[in-house]
Length: 560
Image (cartoon, rainbow, N blue to C red; front, side, top):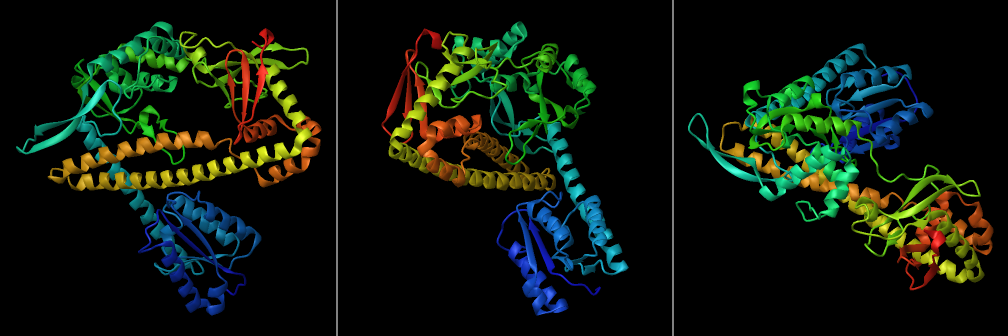
């Protein structure tokens, strides 16, 4: 070891919490013992610790690791000590770059399990060799998982999760070539639901518009599998799902041209069965589900019946590619203040801002608030009149300015609003952490089950493992939906203590202060004070948070 000064760093990482074995605490303690033995008790006592729990070794994108490397630029570390080499990285490219970076700063790297120390040439060489095998192990595991998915694709079975609209999952018994009885899940058509799917495809091809298709479904009272109204997101999901496509010549050529990993021969495309696409979705922690590029799909002819001929399904995909959403246009200037607060009393939907493209006498782009249900159903399910957004926002701000005449009342409203927002925020974050941890455990369980499936092939355990994968996959999909909703709800719950203190101090000059606020500050201020704003067709009712008080704003014809 070179003569150096500066603290010694301990870095520990584990993919998930277990509380045993190579836990974060155990790694740190073993590293500390090593430092005490080789550098002395004082060095062990003064060592710095960086811990990443719940992060994979496949990437260096970990918060505490990045902080450690950033700190190493400000403070000269004598050495970085880890319990085992793969605690840093399983990627040889990342690892080699890290060692070069540490070497340039004269920082040694020590792995106590493998007894590697970069202060010697042999230590550096052995460390690189070991990291090569770590990456090989990781890539072998990934390849094994993909091989297992290929084996599953051969069967064309349904692997579980929420079944597509129009189908249900049924367990089917079959006999293997060696005479064994086995069970597998496959999709069976639900006649009344599949007719809705056909209507969606026909109407979209007729109109070329998700918006018009959505309006048609609303007008004619079509419902989802769970009895809810279809959303444009759900409609697009049905239109882009290959499970409905009949395996015919057109679909075979389309899939081949798009370079999917096709696991069925052309003769299997019999014009009857549907398509089963595996590895189609990408699920990332804390993010909504995304569709992978087609070349990453693993595709086979399924055991279920298809309902949309290949040529028709392909036309829909081409239209979706060209189709630009005709959703309401949010004001580009982002000046609407009541988004998420203004509710239509007639149907209970939120009212959204929409630009007109014109300017008023102040030079501002004019916008209206219109009922989301009225717009989606094209007036068939709600006929609430639109509101002049510029005028309404201005009226509410002007009314709030007069509240400084009774600062005590306003302060009580702020305190009630603050308490409610903080409680909602804390509850939301706690729930998100809980759901994220549960999702991670389920995803880890799926990976373990897939690995076990490869070993159990042909045994009695195979069917049991497949059913377990189906069950856990369904849980992951449901958790993704819940997380997406929570993220949307918590997006605007950001209010700092400094901002609240500033508001309390500024109550005496509220009239001038409101004029100086940015649009975003005004919007957050309104969410703090106001629980909801209701439009009944004649009057605007403003309900304050935690209070029975309500302001009434009659709206004349010029407000519509």
